[in-house]
Structures are given as structure tokens and as C-alpha cells.
Image (cartoon, rainbow, N blue to C red; front, side, top):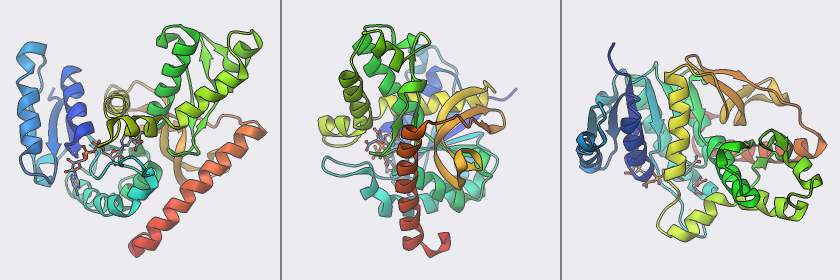
Length: 320
Ligand SMILES: NC(=O)C1=CN([C@@H]2O[C@H](COP(=O)(O)OP(=O)(O)OC[C@H]3O[C@@H](n4cnc5c(N)ncnc54)[C@H](O)[C@@H]3O)[C@@H](O)[C@H]2O)C=CC1
Ligand SMILES: O=C([O-])CC(=O)C(=O)O
């Protein structure tokens, strides 16, 4: 059986890391696409030359023409611009919306059957626009954010409790911005919910609140340290987890920016919710019960995403 084809649209920091991970995990053959000439070709060649050392079987190709992504099984989109210190993700909306238009048209013409994972920021609005521009079914177009935000939450919690990250589960829902919703009640250490751990005296509510805030600020913390761009290792690992769930029909339950129509009382919009990813793409949205506080935070985040979508429609009338 032929190997799956993975097209990476954008061969920058995340794109290159995605290519490396996809090859090492032998998820398939990789095409790195970018408008910058030489960058995707150089990264593809460099990673291919690590193959004999790593011992993986995967072909890697760099491309500047969309015809090279033809028939891709998975497209992961990082094309666009990252933020710099002092900027919010939302400041990228105008410039990255134009990029989503050309990427959406390229995917529509060349890889209409692909499972598409958008990473470009501001995430929830960009994945919505990408679905509109590409015209692909909504269950096949999804945004990566919740896996990353939950991984950050898990990392900070493992430091606080001094336990393995493997024993920490976490759920961060809502939009991928300052209003994201880390759900402490649905986050656990070895199955024990965080509020119970506070009651048990293993941590304090103040410390937990600080970890929640650090999670919300997780992207900005790294932007502040790197100064020239944003996080790329953990974002790439997170998107690879989603791609693998699709390619191997794993039925993983992962928080993703999915098209929600009915669940959570929402009426056809993209936002971070728990999903099941398998061979059918987004196979299910898991409509968990939120308490009044959680619902209020979720509603605020939904409103923020709606504002960004309205701004997209204002910029590009074809979206209205
Ligand atoms: N959803 C999430 O959780 C995260 C999202 N991001 C976002 O991901 C995006 C990419 O980040 P990086 O890889 O660090 O940026 P980067 O600047 O290293 O790479 C972006 C690449 O896109 C290319 N590009 C620009 N316009 C293009 C077009 N029209 N077609 C094809 N390629 C094009 C550029 O040449 C560049 O190589 C940014 O918008 C960033 O904010 C970053 C981290 C996490
Ligand atoms: O913070 C940024 O600009 C990049 C991003 O979305 C993240 O790392 O969560």
C-alpha cells in the first residue's frame, strides 16, 4: 500500500518541525510547500539527509507550486505570519486572512479529499475562513489549539505536583486567545480532579489560579522569550498528534477548534471543543456539561471568536 501523503503548507518554524516529526514517526511522505523559494526545498533535503541516521523511510520534497500537493491525505497549514512581542494573535488577522484565501484555493484545487489541520493565527477565525475558502466539508477542516493549550496546562501541573506528565490530563476549550477556558474540573492527576487535589491540600487554589493564568499566557510567554517569533516545537507535536489520529483511525478524544453546530448551544461556528478524531475526520463533538462559571467563561470566549469572524467578513466581503 502506498504511503499516505502529508502536505505542509508553510515551511517556516512549525512547518519544518512538522516535517521532521512526520518523517521520524513514518506517518507518510511529506511535501513542504511555501511561497519562499528554496526554503521548503532546503528543509526537505536537510531532513531527508537525517533519514539514514534516524532510520526512517519517508520521501520529503520541497515545493513552490500547489500542484505538488495533489492528492494529499493530510494538509497542515502554518502559512502566514507569527506575532512579535507586544502584539496579540488578533493583530495578525488582516494579513493572515489573505494567506488563508490563497491556501484555501490551493487545497480546493489540488487536495479536496484531505483532512486539513489549520494552525495559523488567530486560530479560530483562520480555520473558519480556510473552510469557507476551500469549500471542504466542515468535518474535514479543523484547527489546532486545544491540544497545545492542554499540553501546556499539563506541563505546568506536572511541575506543581511533581508527577509525571503522563499522569496529568487536562482540557482547555474555547478560542485560542486570552479568553481560552482551562477546565480545572475536567483536568486530573491520575484521575483525581484538580478541585479535589486542592481539597486534599496537595496544592492551593491560589497556586492553581496562577497555573491557569500561565496557561492562558503560554503563547505570549514564549513570544516574549524568543522575541523573533512564536512557539513551534509543542505546536508541531500537537498537530502531529491530530494528523496521526486521522491517518490511523485512532478515535482520539482531543480538544480542537471544530465546526460546532448544535452542541454547546452553538449555531455553526468554529471554536475549541472536545472532539473525536478518526478516519472520518471530526467524527463527534463531545458535548460536555459546563457549570455556570465554566459556561460564563466559554460564552465570553465564543463572543471573542465571533468578533474576529465578523472582522474577517468586514475585510473580505466574499465571506459575508
Ligand atoms: N494554533 C496555534 O496553537 C499556534 C499557531 N501559531 C501560528 O502559526 C503560524 C506559523 O508560525 P511559524 O511557523 O512560527 O511562522 P514562520 O514565519 O516561521 O513560518 C510561516 C511560513 O509561512 C510562509 N508563508 C507566508 N505566506 C504564505 C503563503 N501565502 N503561502 C504559503 N506560505 C506562506 C512564510 O514564507 C513562512 O515560511 C503563525 O500564524 C503563528 O501565529 C503558532 C504557534 C501555535
Ligand atoms: O502565541 C502565539 O502567538 C503562538 C501561539 O498561538 C501559541 O504559542 O499558543
